[in-house]
Image (tube, rainbow over all chains, first blue to last red; front, side, top):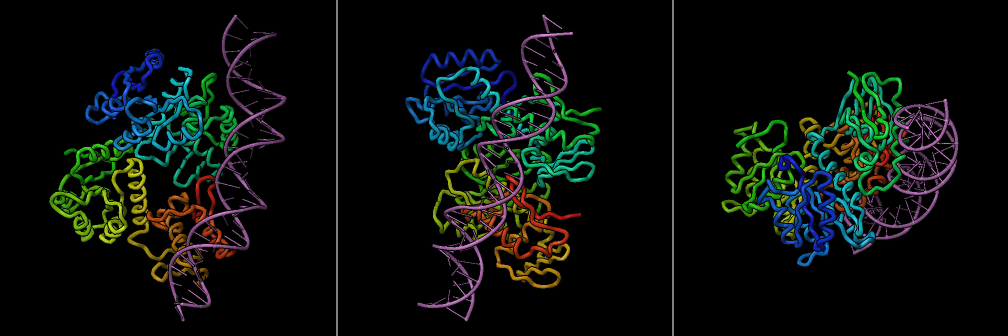
Length: 239
Length: 239
DNA sequence: CAAAAAATCAACACATTATTAATATATTCG
DNA sequence: CGAATATATTAATAATGTGTTGATTTTTTG
């Protein structure tokens, strides 16, 4: 997947000009290119595989477009691609949200929104998609020095000895260890490990990190869970 | 045509270009390589043992191809290999499904489809096949410590003593024991043991696990049925 | 076709894990 | 050095998944 060389293109589908402008501004500030349309037909045209080099990286979709139901559009896009779609609607009920996800949307935002939140969601969705693609051929076993994590078994070994870890802790460790030296913010970890539907406290991460450290401490060796002050955590490898 | 090393190759046999493109995109997203053909003759050529290094891992087959009946193709493939085949047809009746399975297909999907469902089915079939291959050369008898399972006789022995187990329970135990230490989710077990046509409650698994535990308890020794909290079950071997 | 066995479903009790909250400790920067 | 801010730690609570039982439906067998 290599369409996006320079800027990432975000497709805004809305029929209210002020909304489009607000989003366009926020997007530009964060280094995205904004493209806007106001009908469902145009959305489908721009998302079709016909012109892959112009394909947007993500679609912001208002479901109440004049010509076509937004959920249908989402479903149709899903029929031929996994292009990330975020539904942004004025409806703030659970049913609408469930519907959106059922139709294959990647996230759901209610209007009116804070553009900063929208940007955060966009970045989260894009990163999640990238991570999924990155998980090279569904690599389920990773190894660093004396640590072996086998996600087929949901099992971590230190020096060949199994250490009991609850699922969430293993998933967190696996995620960090899959991308060694890369820092993840708490919000990223919540998104990546807990999932975007989850809206919990980011202190949760601290607690899980602490437990991992306790269980893995002393045996570390060539790696450790490092706190990057003011940012987040990373799985650091020592040369 | 250029092939990539490492990726699993999926052969798409369809004569509608948009369908092919939709699948190709979804496949690439999930780390598969897509190869497409639009005639039955080509399917057979690419699946023949002539060029084993280019053999696809799985075939997605539209049965209404211009030159040849898809069910016939499936049968012919079965004549010389166990290559997984998924039939994807617009017909949504039971008869068509039964026919597909009778001709040796591994799964049946009706068009129009959600590509994510297709991907899920592909992965399920591939996993099932891998698991079967793991049971080296259709190993029908496996042995762990004092437990012997003989699927020719549908019989399990503990310490040489036959213990009566109903078919489903034996199948479940056999499946788990064939892949020791590997975690299976309830959905995977439903897919692998009950079959993809089954849409039942995943609590069913719990009940069967419980029965197995009751019948096998105390005699265990070097293995046991382990619950992996929030994930599923595994047949765990103790060193 | 009836009886028996098995498979499935549904309900509730139970256990473990996940999360929150509160407090203590550490780090940064003026 | 000290105030402000961020993280570590611990304990308590909430959430969630599983174990277990028995009733009901389905399938098999005689």
